[in-house]
Amino acid sequence: MNGKVAVVTGASMGIGEAIAKVFADAGASVVLLSRDVSRGEEARRRVGYVERTLALACDVRSRDAIDAAVGATIARFGRIDVWVNNAGIGIRDRVAEMDMAACRELFETNFFGAVACMQAVAPTMSKAGGGTIINISSVAGHVPVAFMGAYCASKFALNAIGKAARVELKRGNIRVLTVCPGYVQTDFGTHLVTSKVGNIRPQSVKGITVERVARATYNGYRKRKREVIVPWTMIPVVKLYQLLPGVVEWGMGRMMK
Image (cartoon, rainbow, N blue to C red):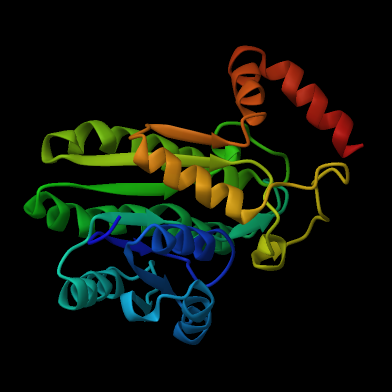
């Protein structure tokens, strides 16, 4: 990764920070984007390599902010080889009762923000001869989870548009990788737009570390994969839902009880 430049949205903590670190450890220059630049700076210090990292304020709900981040990255490092769409928020509520303003806010970040970033960076990558866009989605983008319907819907949409973009952008030598983690050990539950339902994760499921997600993301990038599902134990669950959704729904119902 020496000489390459990676940009990571939602990089002030959790998966985003871990991805920034794994790319920096591999030799890349890394730009950490977050809505709160002070938290981004703190993450940058934890990542290290301060001589080839940069923290910038960027709210992906604003195309102007995204364009400014692209411009600042080009001005500092001269190129963008990898763009990671990681910024995301959640809602934990019943579909029939959730606040629609909160649902729209979630889609503005999780889906429309990622699409806007792809539109902003694709011309730059194409002009430079290519690059890679990585969308951090979720297993919930394959298997809907009760009380997380809006979040799941945003990830289903992200999966679909990312895979369509992969075909469309191939001519410009731009690859699109979709990463779908299962349960992850993060503070995601404390950063929800709304949370009217208690924690739905089974107590027996501890989740994987953000470092494991970051390594899987980097390995998927290096191997030019279309999609990465991590941990691998989630792959049979995804396949089972595709073939026998009723069985998975029955299992979810048992867990909710």
